[in-house]
Length: 590
Ligand code: OXD
Ligand code: MN
View 1 (cartoon, helix red, strand yellow):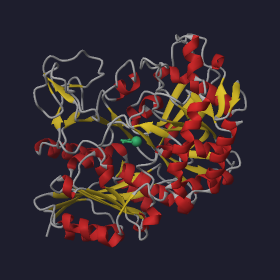
View 2 (cartoon, helix red, strand yellow):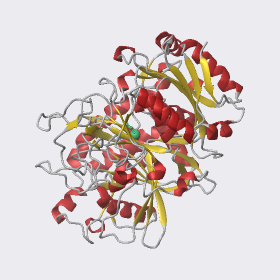
View 3 (tube, rainbow, N blue to C red):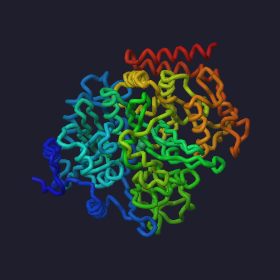
View 4 (cartoon, rainbow, N blue to C red):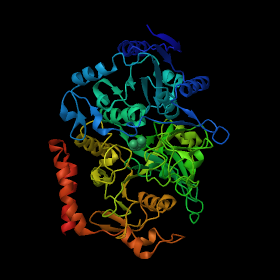
């Protein structure tokens, strides 16, 4: 029998489920979290005692801690992530698949008695504002106090979730155990038909904070298909023009392609009167409103951002956000108890411990911080935090951006002809891979809607759902493709990016409202160079021309790779997507 502490909720469905999970995992203690400040203090002490957290210099960085993960546990492991449906076809070629019975059995054996000597924490959490029709409740059990403290920042945790749920059994059952952190016994399995996630053998954010990728994207995408809404890997940002009018934009980008930077962008000095309002940096849940527009909420409550590359020159608002009450994972530690990473404002430290806790040699050739080192912090600490984040109805979306990392081919920005063509632009998204997942970095892979690792069902059916949503919305957002990452022949980035991306947003918003200057090309509407340059943009006319040019031959050569990819979806590929591919081929030939 385990010792029980904390506040046991009245909801009998939660009680029963936790009892079953505890019977399997056999913890010494069960602790029910309530999400209070006192609890945070107490659990932080526990985390420090057990070595999960290292206190940082509390004078310089109050409330900040460092976590060092196991060396083999630093990123999402997509090869060990499964969607477990009765039929493999339901999961589609975009997911690894296991039959539910086999998977429950396999993982059950790893979970069995895995919490001997440990505490099982029960975390009720709410994704979305309390009382909102958008919001969903999850309950995660975990043996990691680091996970509890991260979930506290990333979700609305504890009593608020229980109040939203009442006596209902409509909650996602999220079971997590670190077990022995052995890669051979690491699995992240999703059971959409049971509204359940089981994750074992990893403590890394995307694998272990089950509210994030597992619930808010993989499980939620399937719920959205069934219930008529969408769960997307998108930031949400409000862009205020000098007249004080705010337009909301969603943007889907693969991991580590600058979503957090864009969500809290600082306008360039030359764009006086423009302001950014941050609603979310990673996930959007979208529904059709009574007015026929798409409305979005950010279900999360915090940022789990990539630290390296974050500095005052790239993302000054993130620098300010992480000044206090932040958990850093796998960054470097300086002698004075403060953190550092590549791209940090401060100079390279002479004396520091690297992310593994070993003395770091600046000349040694290996980075001080892991390239996927992270900060976890509440959204409310962001200087551009938008109180609209709390709105139960969300914010109305005027434009959707699909972005990816491409050195060549894809112009800085172009607009789709309509929703179906926009869905095609999302479906053909491809990007050079980053360090957010294990595997080779810099390889071009297809990543439709930036959802390839996160779509919890057959992606062909998911595109069908996109097309159906476009039909249901009488006034859907306009859809655009963007690419901040074009390089010239010598490998230099052509576009300055960061704050200057607001110029692209300005054109996007003009177009979404029916204005803006554009040229029609076979791939879509491309801005006239003059729409981007002017008022202080310091790049040459030749570079701007190249940024918005369309290389027909290169696009023709790209058609085959698109159709090869689409062919893998067989009968699940919607006619609308096939039609768009044919139409693109015809326009390129004309
Ligand atoms: C993330 C990711 O952590 O996409 O947001 O990997
Ligand atoms: Mn992400």
